[in-house]
Length: 185
Ligand code: FES
Ligand code: FES
Image (cartoon, rainbow, N blue to C red; front, side):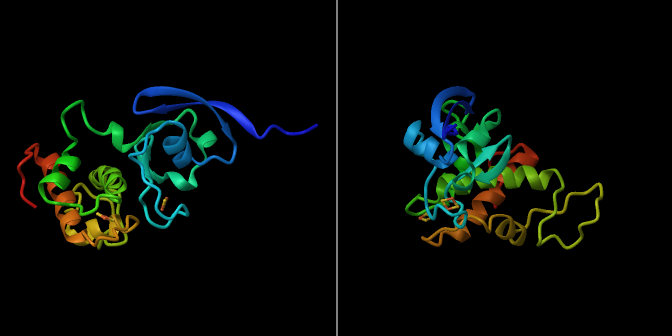
């Protein structure tokens, strides 16, 4: 008996359910871009190296080119199209806009999705390779530029907008920590 090579799945993307049949080999990235016309998520390397395809799965960042669409069924998927609150940009989007955290913009959706998760991971006390003292404690160490560079190191930018990207992430993190959207990085 021949095994089926496709399945009908339902993906929960940005709070909306999308039913579609997919070949089992279809990546989440291709399902988003080619099947659902959600082209904000970009394809760079298509092999997990550049971060352009980063989306959030249940709030945690993942490279969607290495994720099978069938494996994403039942998860909460957030793409760049879903991070704003209606007309109100997400603080990370606003910071990228205000501080020129991009040039051509191709890597930017992935950078922004990654940065949203970085800020959450840091606030939850998750250490990075740049964290000097990884012992759990009541105080979360500051999200320094070195920390941001390390935590964002999976997101490459061929335009080299890194200086502005670090500033934008720092500003958005500061705004979240203080509730002040005008914190200066
Ligand atoms: S396109 Fe997925 S990591 Fe490069
Ligand atoms: S802004 Fe062009 S690749 Fe990053």
